[in-house]
Image 1 (cartoon, one colour):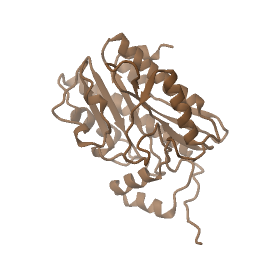
Image 2 (cartoon, helix red, strand yellow):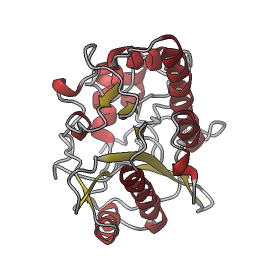
Image 3 (spheres, one colour):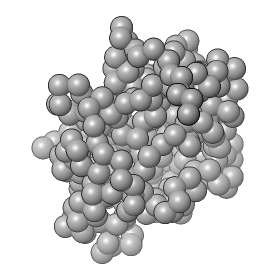
Image 4 (cartoon, one colour):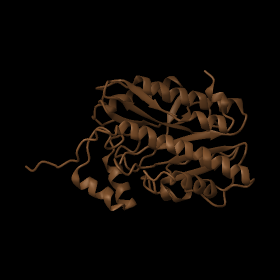
Length: 301
């Protein structure tokens, strides 16, 4: 049997650091776009804010011009929800055309913003997805719900251990959700089980094959997106993959209240890193956006 040829291991560049830097750039880029767009326009469409964010992301030439999660177009999404209208931010899946950014849906300064970007590093193929729910209003019950969802996501990270199988983490995750009176409602078209609470970051803990390197060198965004999508392992009910050193994986349940249907779906997409020395780290990068959008209550312990 022929051995699969793989690229030389990354020695100078730490791939987990690449993941962190890529995600951090997405967060900083959103801040820059939000400041500029909201300063010059009182009426802002989803497409306008999406385009502003995409332009900022593209200033980093270490990244491909488009994200890997396509559709939505360009691998970037913005959705606006009204203060009392939760339908748009209760999307089943961002891939569906009716949930792509729309030029005729406008910013509600007391409402919600769902933001998502999926940037890809050119040199390593490492992704640095970033997503979150922004709430601009003052309803205390909604604010409390957002804090509960964020704290729950962090609790899931704390429960993850080296050597644990992804299916075991999934079981623990749902026990935590039950204790917090929350329900995960992610629908995944890529996961054979139909739902999950996260997935591995491809190439974080494994080298690319020569054939996979060739796909990235072609710079074809559709081929790159398909390759990354298929390489993921999911935090679901059946995946036996073990958490190991140098692995990165997302923790991204989209959470509803089990008891109060009037509360919105909430997503705080994070990435767990397990370093070579065994220490783990949670990438959030939400703090600047909390401050920028008046969500200072999320910073309170």
